[in-house]
Image (cartoon, rainbow, N blue to C red; front, side, top):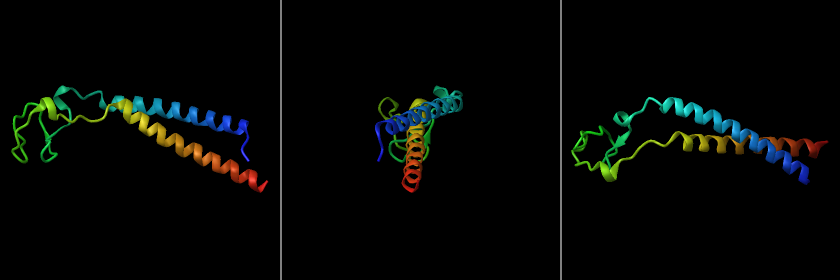
Length: 108
């Protein structure tokens, strides 16, 4: 069985892995997206999903009229990307370590 001390160790491992992965992911995704400006945002046509310029009045793919005030779809912010990466990675690493510890304890 897992006692309280083991749970605290698992929680500490999860926290350390999460924070370090989050910081690395956030810095990396911020550097990658730093060159983006208002001119090169990833704007998508709401009708067909094609990439369009922020100055276009009509979609070059399907010809739909574009109203950027309500239909701008922008790539995710680096902080949300970093959070998703860190959470998934931390859960995976912590779960793997927990299974390893439980397996070792069972056979020892």
